[in-house]
Length: 399
Image 1 (cartoon, rainbow, N blue to C red):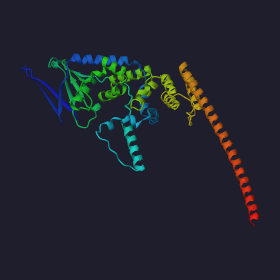
Image 2: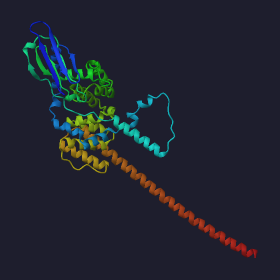
Image 3: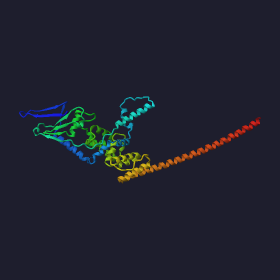
Image 4: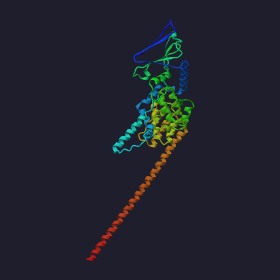
């Protein structure tokens, strides 16, 4: 059912009445003044202008985030750890519970814990900033000055998605327009509240409070709170997540988001920006060349880069050659990245030579042990023969 609104003015008197009819219920919320709406629109425009780099990325690239192969790569990179994802659930219980389990029950319990950790580690989608929905539908000069504040009319039909819910605003100058995003978010939170979300965002998402949280490296707390407060395509959510990702790159603290739901979107963000050099250096420095292969595979999927087929067996020699092939394709001249590759190759050669030396020593030791055992068996045989001869002579003498 649609929304039917009738506004009637009685010219014979100064009494002005509003007749609002709806199938279920019509909510009328008085917003702030028109100046505040204009200020919100200008603020959103400034946020969009600051995200010029994000707007330059084609929107079809964001759609790749939900592809199954991309999701598999991001989950591998996240390296979900149940002990890190589920630490607070055990702290909620005042007493410990000890349960006797069979081996099969223990395997099932571990599987259930891993599934629970995967559910809690579900990655928030990476979306482009939402487009402005403010549009003037009609202007009635006779209603100009009827009210000193704007009036919001909301369709309250049950079961409608939030994006499909009709919401219009009648401004004091008589214009009827679709509600801007700020008004929609505020009114929807008033009448359809969500747990953890406020009508007005907390101060922690702006100003010096946001800077202090990032400075203290409280990334997970900040990003989890932003997921509760904002939609994934909200400009403020995108701005906050980008600030956190940039700080992780500047401080080389990518591991702070490892095994969290935000590690995959961070990697996808740097791939969209074509800035994976520092991330590859970090992974190589952490002795994680297999994750470097996954990042390069993701990069080739997003930007249609033709590379050699990824190695099936992750040996250091094969992986370093694959990484060098990617560097040559992208014309990366970062000296520190090349140094990390050389260090990895040198470390592998040293470890392989050391293992060969150990295997040779073990082989020589086994040969010496076999020789000693054979000589011991020969000596035992000679002694047994001498004993038998002695026994025979003794027998003859006894006879």
